[in-house]
Figure (tube, rainbow, N blue to C red):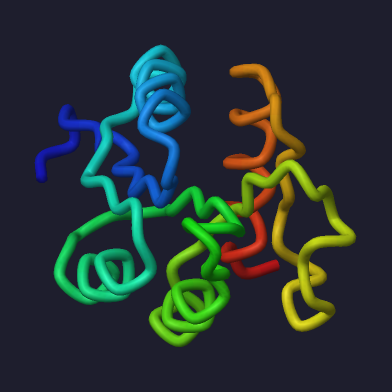
Length: 126
């Protein structure tokens, strides 16, 4: 990458509701970022988390009756920041993920940007 090239943030979306995934994609593109991939089920998300190249992930907590916490744990092990997007709020997220930003559904584009900024700052050294 040359000094004139700028890295565009690559976002992995894990969301089981297709309309919400598309809305999230529009928000991400509107922020000037790119979508690296999608997953709508836990097994698919686990597989793609290991295969895809991305900078940050947005995880729906409830994936068709299964929780996305194993994906979150895998991301933590790999040192990839992520945010949770859920209708349950912070109370729906286990204590082990206390430092992870949580977006309450429904959210706005500026809320998404704020959560991205927070998650990415957590990975920066002091």
